[in-house]
Image (cartoon, rainbow, N blue to C red; front, side, top):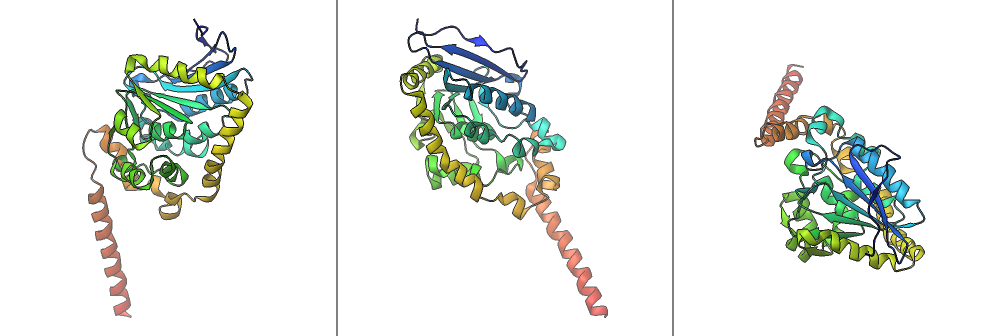
Length: 295
């Protein structure tokens, strides 16, 4: 047997994630695994989840004997489905974006991160996976974005970086139309590196980890940093369009309607809101004209 058993790191007392490490017996280098452990929520995250992932990645990144980090979700139904809608409905959705955005968690790591995807990989979970250095998908994986469906806009380099992964046309299709893609479709578009049967996923991940650990860890760290320079550049130059176009978006009616409709299991009435805004604007303009005419 080439690997030691997984051992949980109990030092931090994590509640939303499982943090483990194991080591290759011949190569001696190790792997850290972070499992989002909220299967009852399809591994959707809150700011607390992101905070725990941050601490785990920070630890693994600074552990000299760890060469790879694996990021996955508990159970077979989901890798991650983005932000927990119940949590977002409370008006807290901005918190994890300004502190520990999912994609930035990947960027802070010195070690390459493999996303091991089973089941749903949606919304924040999807762009968390495509920011990882490698993505290995089980054949039951499904990918896609949710933003316009639930009025939760991601913007800036989080969106734009996908063009580097799958090309501009597919990136716009994925973000603007919120379509769902099978594992094979994701492989065809370059969203994932490989697809394997669900029961072979852990075995395939081990193979990739072993291959990485057989190489110079210092060179791997330099290469990851070199590739990630592009992310740094995009993060520093791309403005957040939601702040420019809709500075009060999260306090607005569309942002409230999206999560509410999702929780009530109905179609959101976004255009009803837009129509009401148009009518209100007409009334205001009529009042202004009336005042001007009376002078």
